[in-house]
Image (cartoon, rainbow, N blue to C red; front, top):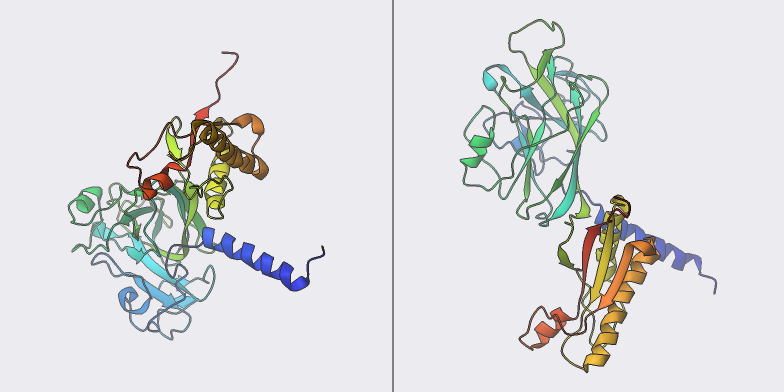
Length: 364
C-alpha cells in the first residue's frame, strides 16, 4: 500500500511532536524574549522580564534591543554584546567587592520527577567593562521561590536557614576562567532530581575568598574588582530515569489489560527510557519478569506472564538492544504487589518488572 502525502506528513508531525515534548525546555522564558515592559531603568529584572526574578536584594538587570536606554542590545552600560539568540538577555555580578552578589530565579514548567535525570545548560559571556573573570558558577533548585534579605553570597548555610526546601549547590564543571567577551560560552551540568524541585536559581554561591577570580587587566592586582556576566538561552531538559543496579523497578505504564500481553502505547516511552539508559551503560544487562493477577489457573498465568515479559524483551531488542544483554521470565501470580483482591490491586499486579546488573567477568 502506498501512503498518501498528507498521511506521511501527519505521521511525521506526530513523531516530531513526541520528540519535542520529550526534550522540551522546562525553564520558562529561557531566552528572555518575553517581557512585561521594555527596559528603561537598571535593576529591572523583577519588573520587566516575564517569569524571572531576583531571589535576594541583589539588583539583577534585564537587557533588550527594544530599549533606548543603557539597557539596550547590543550596546549597554556594560559594553557591547550581541545576544546568543533572539533579542534579549540578563546580566548579573558573579564577583564584586564586599561579597556583593546578584542572582536570577525562574519557576519551571513542572516539578521534576524523583530519580529523573536532567541536563541544565546556559550560555554566558563576560561583559567588556568587567575588571576580571571567575570560574565559579552554580545552580540551586528549590521547592518554592526564594526571597532572602541579603546582598551577599547565598552560601549553603544561608540556604539551609530558609524555610524553603532547596537542593545542595551544584557547581558547573570548571574548564577555566570565563574570560571570553566576544563569544558566548556554554556551561552544562547533569543532575538527578529529588522530586520537589520547581524553581531554579543561578549565580555564584561562593564568597570572594572562596571564588577563583583573576584580574584580566592586571593579574597581579590583589584588590577586589568586578566580574559582570550576561546570561542567555537557559534550558533544563529531561534525560530519563536514573536506575540503580540490583534494584527492582516496575515499568511505568506497562500494566496490561486483563488477559492480554500486548503493550499499550504509553508503555513505549518507558521502554525507550530503559533502552537509552542501557545504551549509555554497555556494562549493564537487564532481567525482565512478567506477572499476572490471581484470576485464571496457575498454568495459564505462567504462560501469560512469560508472554508479557517476552513482549517487553522483544520491544527492547527491536529498539537495538543486543539479545545477549536481556533475559525474560514469567512468575504467574506468585509475586503480587497487592493482595487485597480488588480491581485496583489486580491492575497493579498485571505488570512487568526489571533489574539491571553488571556483567560478571568470566576471566577474573
